[in-house]
Length: 158
Length: 324
Image 1 (tube, chains in turn green, yellow):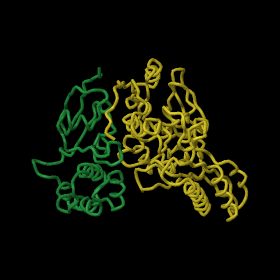
Image 2: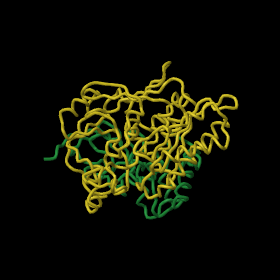
Image 3: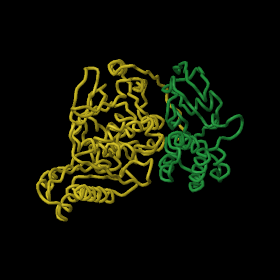
Image 4: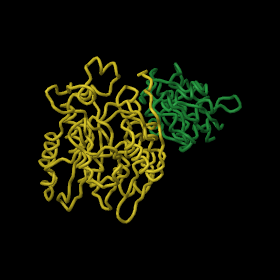
């Protein structure tokens, strides 16, 4: 019989409590228990970054994180970024600069970029490349992705 | 990799002693730090623990203290936090270089100092899915009886590839470990053994709680080679510590990761101390590294390449440090 626990955490600004098995991954919890399917499962082994979410503001890989280990922490997913139903500056920049092709890596790319832009207001190209070093785009749209992050940083700064 | 996780329980002790007690009381227990290596392995059917002891709730393991006698870095400090620590950056900058170079940002935010120091050895025949390993009759490191890298070998050749260890080795670090029988401090070289299966000299239930660095360390640099500029483990990584006295080498130490089942200090280097750093001496450093590394077919990159990479990194860094 799978051991379960009551998991309390803050998800996208709201406190929640859910009954989760000890062996449940954070990505499964987000997608299947809370219905936030914006977070994607890619390689399923911490190698591609598609499942990136923020835990206490830092980018983490939800496919290699156990839900049981994030008790009491603050989780943010792609669903938290839109403001009053409108895309955030970062989301808009990915859309307008064509930083999104098939879109599968996009939620992870955007969450990793979001973590960067919270600490670096005007990141250089190199800094952006390092911050997105753990995110793989199989459409290889990296040039446009980096342009999108630069555009968002400029828009937020102005 | 689509395997679901096996059934296990997770406990989150508040102290190292409680963690050790939980381990003592459960035959199938394993310690869980950042989980960036352990969770993918468990998903691949490696380990099959009954109980994971999450060390993330132990506040004492998350401290970095830099004082008059050196530094104490808690094993639970994440690589991302270590990389941002100003005191470590001032006193031990090569530790920061190594920490920043590990995997990708998502791994560094979760991965810990203790986890990296104790990183499981890796091999193309081991880090594979259950069906892949099963169809190959498993391997000596886990569930099998043959090392596919060296079929006649009586021990496992999986490679150790932690990035912090070579830097900590040339700095003369020690590690503090805690287990059911209490705590002890051991010199870092004594933590490792040249067997990919039993690469850590820890007793059952022991885990690393802190890394201790001496106050004075030599000027040190770290560099590694890998297939891509992020995420990948090192094919070879080399730390060099060198002090220059006038035109002579005042002190010199070289340590290597990624090529053997343990990170190690290159022997014979001490004989070069007191002499100049001529091209001949650089050749000698390269030769000593080439002779002591033993890369096997544990990665997709050919062993002879990794051997030469390690030697080239050692030469280049010694030269750069001497030039100042």
